[in-house]
Length: 255
Length: 263
Ligand SMILES: Nc1ncnc2c1ncn2[C@@H]1O[C@H](COP(=O)(O)OP(=O)(O)O)[C@@H](O)[C@H]1O
Ligand SMILES: [Mg+2]
Image (cartoon, rainbow over all chains, first blue to last red; front, side, top):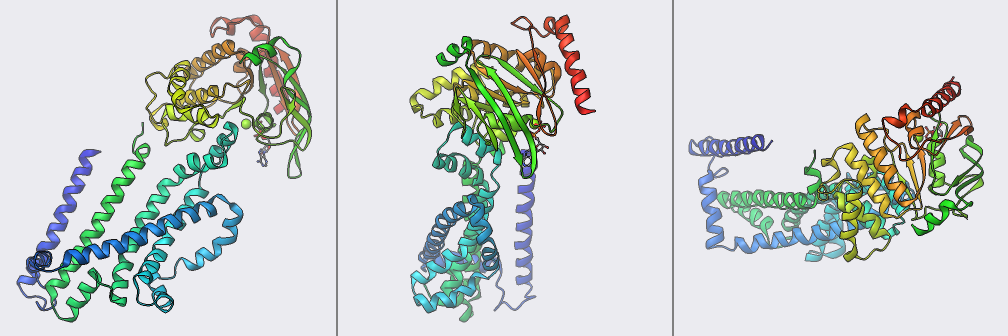
């Protein structure tokens, strides 16, 4: 089990290294105009330069903050609403069609509405990010709460648990794998929307960095920003993975 | 526990079905069932599948309410589950919280009863020892065998210090050796505490081996078809008891009953 995981890890690193190498070969042989495609070496140098002489760290932090706060609001609201809907069959029957209608709407479509209501402000960005990241959390939470083993509710009744205890000790832990999966998706959505909002509303961050680099044909800077976004996405996935491993020990252990 | 000890000799029934009728939709599953269970007795319920054994047990647990008649526990009409009535479900895999260790699963009953946090560890250790799970406190249910999982559930029920133990085919999914072990453990625990037991099973030998009384239900609608008292000496013994002429006679009688009931 551990051995095969290790092999998978090696294989994925080899694949990644191979892609970077192909990128380098393509760039070195000028198969694509270098104005549009610098090699990984130049992109990396631009990244280092951005952090040492530029203010890429400030922009990175700004994007991370936008993503984090939006995600946090989405998670709190999503779990609370999802718990209410998921534990009440009546509410679920009533709201499900509406949720299904709203769900497939692309979150970026809410940006013009948000701008009209809130202007080009940080509040607008927070609203858009939170609203977009809300859906995956909400739907996963609804599913998690509605899929609680009915027998466990009977156990709760037989033991005489209070309603709060049934939610806190039975329903919430039972739904937690779904909730965490929803929060993982929500974080990805939050990152995407933070960057898109920065680009559209001109708020300072990685999004504007990438957009400005593209407009002024600074391809290495552009790729540096994109690489950083990829790393950021990867880091958040790892962080959530660690959280899951901690909270869901019981799932990884079995006979 | 004091209370049940007193009940044991007393005449008032601990569980009392009084002309109980239950229907799901327009289908009457149990019709005018009357049945008194004396304190400290182990009453085993058998009957063809679908005859309403589980339904009767769930009514005794207060999980469902009869449409007609009444179910009384220790003299009080039952309207909702009570803490002094514990239910052991057959599907231990679903009745345990997979995210809690064996100890934490037992703790749930103590938390529900408002036992102070500081008193819980000692109580849990005692309860797990009682069902033979010492040393397995920190294992998750999925790390344990079926027999051990059912032991956790029994320990959790004992944590309720129940006057009545309702068991719905609790050993039905276990292999023969494990089942016999758990039967004897249950008998010695019950003998110690004087708990009244309402035990549903489809295993006729198990019913005779455990019971002071065996009741056979008939189906459509569920009603009492046979009511035997079991006069076998206690403590019972897996080899000796099962070879006694009285055991064989009762087994034969129940076998004939089931054959007729199903035919
Ligand atoms: N929740 C329910 N809704 C409708 N019918 C049910 C329900 N529970 C049990 N029944 C029906 O009631 C009858 C008795 O069920 P049950 O008490 O589970 O039988 P047993 O435990 O003796 O096998 C069966 O025919 C079953 O289909
Ligand atoms: Mg049944």
